[in-house]
Length: 444
Image 1 (cartoon, rainbow, N blue to C red):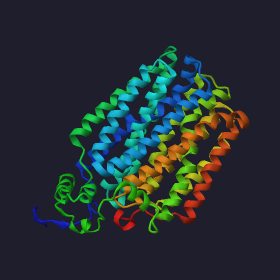
Image 2: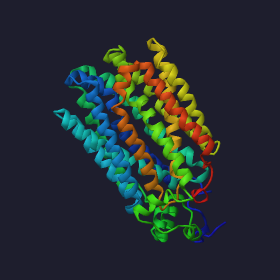
Image 3: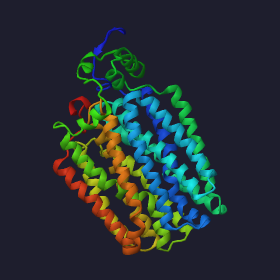
Image 4: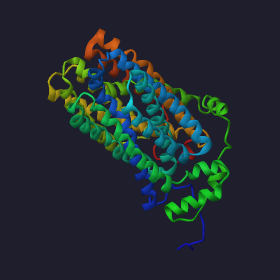
């Protein structure tokens, strides 16, 4: 038995039990995810009703989504850079406050231009929090179960997708402006902000990188109950660099291969995933389903979101992370081709459910994969850069979707999705590194 004051040499949380306090931190992140994803998914359900209420065209809807994803790009870059400099906790909480306030503002918008601005602010806050949270969970979880906690945290948080779908199904048909009520639910995000303000701890890895080892050791003890000595872990930390040094460092001989593989992956696969998750309701409406049928179908499809993330938690730590990622995206590519060609309500929702489950499982494994691939000094900046560029590519693709649909119809859009999923899978399988089950220090 160790004396209560005796320290053990340890690599942060690796090898330690996940305590009740530790789980509370993950529960807070789940709560924040939940309200963030309500704001992220709601427009996909609202768009057909908004088109009818404001007499919008598909081109105008694509302008809204273009602005949203451009703002996500900026939010990802900002969240990654800022959290590497002021900390994970402050950036995480600030992002929650922003997207909650912006969601309420969406509901009060009285013109398309005002709606575009408030929707863009929502996107900025949503992705700022998303990028920060990925590095935060990676740094707070033990190496052996890092993928599990990434997946479980997201699976619970992303239950917001079917729930917001159910709310839309019940509320939007009430009257022409009832879609505004969905945005007002964003105010609940302030609950996550208040709870996080009181109970969230800063990342010990980030504190050690700032030379604040006593604070880091204190936080590890508060969370796990174990008195640890982080001096050995601290000896492996390279001093923090300037933003430009970090960005250049991503392309240094040590990191260039993984950087190019990950960039290719996010630039191609991210737009494909968002066609499935954000455009399906609108495209089904354009295909001939009425608003009520679209909402009902999309609600069923959205149940696939938490199911996919639960699957992610089960398989993420297998095969060095890249194998389950590749398998899930390959399955999604096959399902996308089938989805574009099936007819009838039951076949559409059945295939669509499986498609979204595979997309979401793969995308969250990729979040872990990217965050694990870089050292603490550049983790959030690199993660933010990769994911922001993925959203930048997605924003440009929003303007292509109406053209693609007009030229090649529903089947053509989802054939393009399949191609955009299978290409990056091949690159990851051939050149991607294995990260699952290893300590972050060993990987970097």
